[in-house]
Amino acid sequence: MVESRHLGELEQMVLLAVLRLKDGGYGKAILDELKNRGNRRVSPGALYATVDRLEGKGFVTSRLGDPTPGRGGKRKRYLSVTPAGVTALRKARRAWTSMSDGLEEIMEA
Image (cartoon, rainbow, N blue to C red):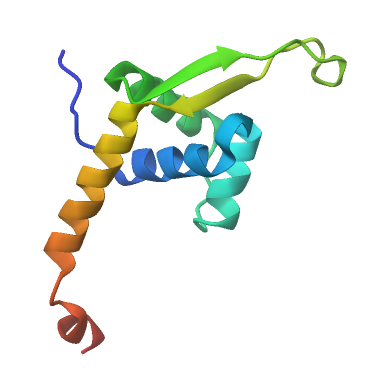
């Protein structure tokens, strides 16, 4: 199955959150960013399914951090947006802007 190169809304929001978090982009931080900035509550399962999709599309890469005692020795999965991910975000933003241009009056009515 060929992955779509288009971004869904949650994919866009996750990419934007990862960009904002820079090198600190991992699960809990991303979930907090989505909740606080995006007013969107997302389950950890939905986040990781989205991250896996984005990784499959080549829009993010991940690396495992060092194990920490506070996490029972578990390692955090840190994310970075790839240049292809930035390009996909730019295309999605251009498409959204193009589709919404001139609709302010209609939407206010």
